Structure formats: C-alpha cells, structure tokens
Length: 420
Image 1 (cartoon, rainbow, N blue to C red):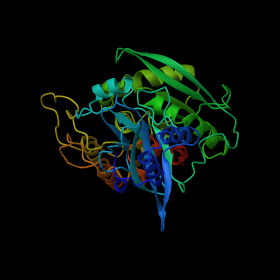
Image 2: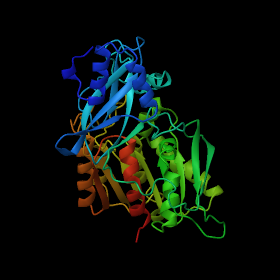
Image 3: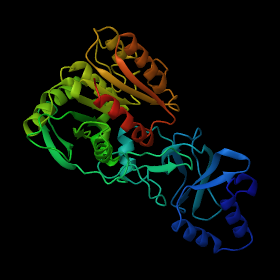
Image 4: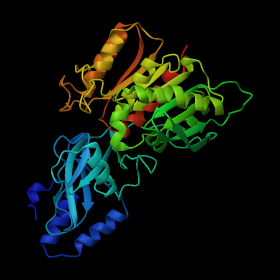
C-alpha cells in the first residue's frame, strides 16, 4: 500500500489509514459513498482559491495491469496507482477552478503507439472507458469516438446554449443514409429541421458538420434550437455527416479531393432535392473538428461557390501530402500544404471561424515542421488576414477535446450565420 506521503487526497488518505488500522470494510463503505455521489473527487486546497485538487478513481482488480487517465490538463502519462490490494486505482492533480474539460481512462496499456486501427479495436474492447461514476458525458452512441466524461470545475463558465432551460421550440433530427458512387460507400447523416420549417418559407441557410455523429451527441441540434429561439441566428437547417470509420477518417479528411467531391457533387445535390436549402454560399457553413476541420477548410477552398463559411476547430494545418500514408511520386512533402494554397491563390469569398486550445502545444512526430496545432492555427490566421479574409479567431482555455469544442460552438455559429 502506498505510504501516506504519496497520497494527496484527504479522502483517499482517510481510507488508507482505515485499511492500515485493520478496518477491511472501509473500502466497501468508500464505494457505497461514491455510488451516492459523483467523481472525480474535488477537494479544496488550503490558501488557494484558484485551484482545487482533483482525484480520478477507477474500480478494478487483478485483471488490470495498469490504468491511466487521459485529459488535456494532465501533462504526464496520467498513470494511476492501486491502493494496496484493493480494487481502487487513483491519481490526483491540481486543476484551475475555472475550467471544464473532457477525460476518459485507458486500461491495460501495453506500451504500443496508438494508431487509428488499434485505437478502434481497443475502444471496442472497452479499454478506453468513460467514468461510470460521472453522469455527465459528452458523446453517446452516434460516433466511433469513445464516450468522454465531462469535468466542470467549481467556477467553470456556464454553457447557456446547452440544454432546455428556456424550453425553446424543438426542431426535428432525422437519421438518414446516402449512397456515394464517388466513394463507393453508404454514408450516415443526420438532418436537423428547424421548428419553423415550411415549404412556403423560402430557402433556408444551412450548416454542414463533419464528424457528424459526434456533433449530434454534443447536442448541436439543441444549441440550434436555443440560438434560433433567442434570435441569435436565423432559422437554419443542419446536416451532420458521419465518418465512414475511425480507421479511415484521417485519410478521408486529409484534404482528400474525392471526399470533397462527394460533399459538393453528391451530398449537396441530394440534400437540395429533399429540402429547402439555400444555394447562396454566404448562407452556407461547413465545419468540423481536428482532421474534419481540415477537411471542411479544404472543401471550401475547392468549392467556394457552395460553401461560403468555414468552422474549423483545432485543425492540424501543418498537414502535408503523404503525412498519413506513403506519399505518391511527385507529391508536395512540405508542411502547411493547405496554408500555402490559400497564401498563393486569389482571395476567395470565404469567412472563417478558427480556434485552437491553449494546451494544444504538442508536436506530432510525423509533422516535418515540428509545430503544434496551436501554432499552425496562428499561422493560418495570419495568412488569411494578410490576404484580406474575415477571420474570427479564438484561443480557448483547453485542449484537443470535445468539451472545448462544444463550449465554443455557439459563438462560431452566431458569427458565421450573421453575414452582413
């Protein structure tokens, strides 16, 4: 059992002392208390009003060789420690009191690099679980991303556009399937129809989000209900296009011309045949997170006559051809490929919301430029502004996670939907 000096949490320390004194039932009492409360355990720090001690816990026995907690605010490996021979694993960290962030666990890590393929297999095997003692989850069952738990610290900013506090009129969200001959695939998408939708109301502005299942899980339809009811945006439609699979997502979304063609030449005409959607680019938004934000930017670059507004969250603009696969002969292998495309082309009729997290400072080992998502977004911002583009740029207090992206979505949608 760890020595008391290694245990920062007073709650875990009391449990350790009880067990050391021979009270073998104290661990069961602890788990009963956890069942009736919630995790992580948040404890005040003496003489420190700006931070709290956060203790993550996991319940598991001899079937586990190791447990890690994954969170943008954790700088080390996130390794958790087992309390003696009990089934309690724990790790404590000091967090700012004004942030909210996502986290999940990693079980039985064998030390191999996480790739797109083995990540999917490990998620299916339950090796990247969310926190069973935290009822606040960010993702549900509509995406191949693992479910994440939400940690909202005591003074975290509220998200006024999430939930149904004002009981706004509700739109309708339908799950549909679209056949792509270009990709030779069936694609899942969700259609959000605003509460005021009418065939006699003319053409509606619209939003297309890639990684669509994740954005449905994040509650974007509810966000749109609230923004429309508050007249922050005009009534609009939204389409959420899901990735074919997590294993192929990075190839599909890395400035892939076939995927951009699918969106512009198949998906948009298919939607136009079925719904009252505007053909005016200024009334059309396309967006995504991480790789799909890169994909949305590329689609707008290729098809500005369709997509007039780009919503890109934490996009890896350092991308270069061949980064995610063996390069074809003659491909451009210099980093910042898409940034240079914008820099060297005439200014297009596009507007942008770009964002990156203040913690997104890590360097991908495949990135020749040895730069981060944060710095590459700053670079993209500077190039776009120098070319005369209108850019709403945000450096959010957070990392590469859906908590960060959900929090900034309402601002992005309000900015892009109100084009003068």
